[in-house]
Length: 388
Image (cartoon, rainbow, N blue to C red; front, top):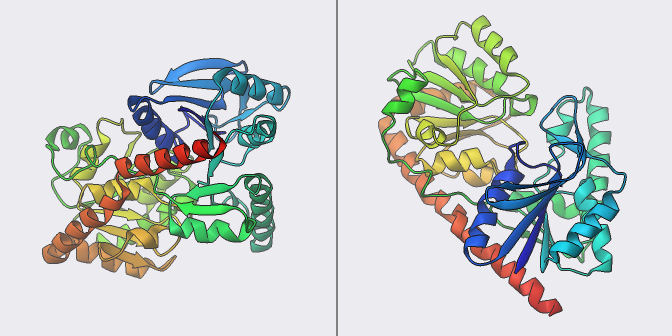
């Protein structure tokens, strides 16, 4: 089969869409399929580049102001360019990853080709509305964003999303005739596991030999890392541990300043960006993983932590409630005291730690990338067979 992935964000912008395609795409190629990607170009001109051994066709785009790695395609000539790419590649199935301009255009242009299309939703309005002040304005923007989502995805017959939580969130915005399905984005359980020598990474990032509370991800407003820092500041008065913050984002300097003002600059280590080869070992040396984001349709970083045998402390929101089931603690949004209690208990109680560690390894098995690959490959084949 020829499979065409479509996304309005892609490498070097690292997000859930990129991680899904860059893992599943090469695996499909190793099974004999031909895979290509349409995404924004890294320049103002059309491009064709190899990324993760996949052909990525870039449509001319311009960088956004707030997030330079996110690029917006030029609407001029986009239909003609998309039509030409589809004609040249001749895909058997198209898999769109969002409902923005490129994906929207592909769906519209495809009416003339009638190629089977599967859509996947990785979108939650909270990732955008977090920047808006005022409850009324947030509600209005969220309503508008879901309306735009529905305009595009109501044109396809099957929409997947990584969790049942995601299905429940998007289902009210889709017509009855649109089928929905929960399929995990998957995780490489060979790459992320509890075993391995962490001494090199510990030395490289100057991580003390004490229990490590870990966060991995973007340092942006919707991730609510400021709440975690306040909990860490309280817990640090009674428990000796390190809070390791891995990632980069718009709030990094502000969060470092907050840690200093809270008097925990020695307990909180901000590594910045960590290369892929180091990341699995960062998880391995941690005692527990913590996440405060209320806008997660899956949370790959939480899955990576679980695959590494870590208990999870998570806000009771989004898909996190599907991942934390006896392998950690769920707390209500903004409940700093509950976060502190969880940090103290998992840091000091080895019996609870070992039980949750085993449970994390058990739950994460259902999210293996091989299982995800087999599910999507079957869907592609069934869609192609229907039009054959």
